[in-house]
Length: 228
Image (cartoon, rainbow, N blue to C red; front, top):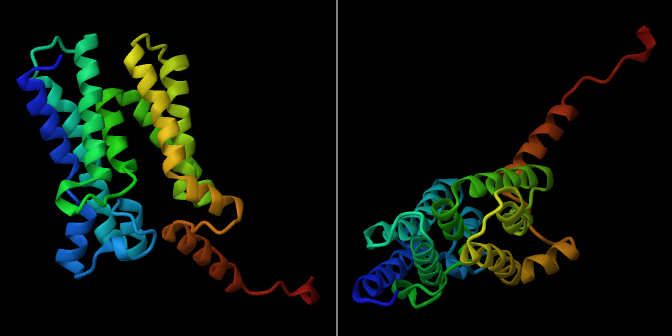
């Protein structure tokens, strides 16, 4: 599996992941480094928190795309599409982009947690499993308002979906899905602590919806019991 082509693809995958979207957008358009604010991470979630949705949405989309494109570099290899060697290479390339995002060459090796890039990797490797996880994430986010909780629960569900729903028999994919769940839990250790202390911040748009709903209820005219 180790040859000049695969090494070149591996380097390309890492460089794709190393594109520090949050840092570049923050510095170019807002003249700030998002790593100096909020959670200190150069990721989509912190960009939403610090700079808002106008900056957060493109960061999210590009970070997802980084992982997806890295996985699809496997099509430049001589392996049979869908075969075990091909899938193994997809996973290795995806991991390379994830490492690049967390330790970006172009941003002093200070990146983000890699959740968006990880989503792109999963979309490239197992599309339908990823879509189910996305649905779980959205449901948890709407119910709880916590991005971190949605990320962790959807990651935990991924190996369950791969193994028990799609009944995958590819050992590397099964191991990868389990490692994803473990990695997400490890990188969200501080979030878990804040959730337990009830100090975790909720998504801003969830707060706005709740506030708008509360304000609308307060604006209602009180019921005139005397007229009944």
